[in-house]
Image 1 (cartoon, rainbow, N blue to C red):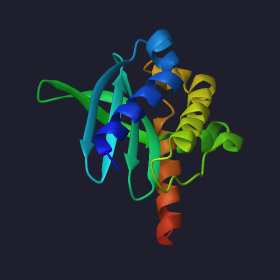
Image 2: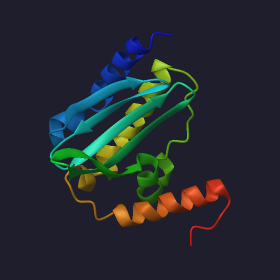
Image 3: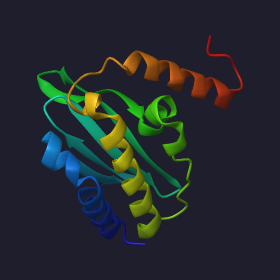
Length: 153
């Protein structure tokens, strides 16, 4: 395993399958970092952030969120798993796949599916309208409560 090579492969896959973020929404690669046991890539435009994170113990996920000003710097703020957005807007597109190793084919498939979902169901967030976030917070809270076996209410 060469994690530096994997990071570059992940960057290339993100730029391939999420190219519309750059072309249609003005996103740029803001940060790409390797910190074992994982890596992440942050894409940002003037208002929003999309993050792709991979951990070698078997997790790949994407979040979408807003940017905030902190200590004079623009940083990622409130964010939610893209699958929570899909749970609200297009449950049939929610991805529940587990990536157990750095598998380029599986990662490409998930990024492609998330890209399609973002194009169809996240235009508001990608353009800086975060009014759905209160509903996403509830979906996240419910999901965490189910995971912990408690009630979110």
